[in-house]
Image 1 (cartoon, rainbow, N blue to C red):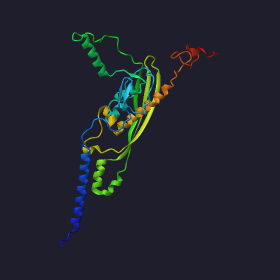
Image 2: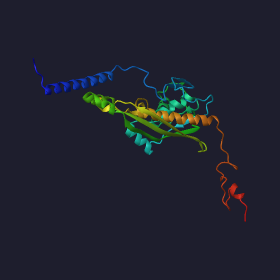
Image 3: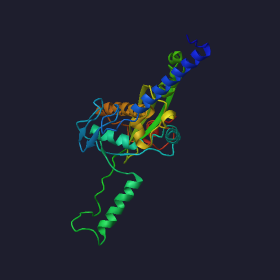
Length: 295
């Protein structure tokens, strides 16, 4: 009869645990290396496409307009502190492509192109067609650019990952639990607050302002294990938990704005806008000032 020492038994148990951990990592690693498929993906607040006044695959919760209200230029302040912070932390990229899709899908505004690089491309194409190489009948003459009636400015006011939760239940699995915990990462919440401002181009008057909020729970995998984590460019709004919650907050902002615009009523000031207002100062020359009794 062969006698097995206690040390041999402990070594065997450790070997089995290690083997189980390796198997778990290999299994999940294999799942993460599946063949890419086109389309589908996880649901995001802004999705699908727009073409003119028609849409395909848009979020069903997006507020829409039966009447287009005018043309809009969407431009963010890339020098703002929030822009640099969230791009360096989450690599979200510009919010403009996301907002342009959302706005066109709503049919509330016609979006005009004002991106600096795109405008350079447009100017270059016009110059080419005006030269000797341009084909006759291309109709690239002047006076065809459409003016923007409004400007829309986005801002991320708050977006961060909340506290980490829920790794303790894996501890009882020993080495395998530690490996599984490393692969599966942790559960945490993400929240974001955003704002949108709509300004009349001709007068400079603010037409509408709206704030939005969104929150989700991130069951994300730990990117350090397999060498992935955040996305780059505009794709981060569709492939990272932080980007998705920011996108959801923007659609909340926009939905609130559209609801308010449906019942839009212009603000009026007695005597007209920009003529001094109603807070007159005694001795002043504005209409409100002249109404103040002299003592």
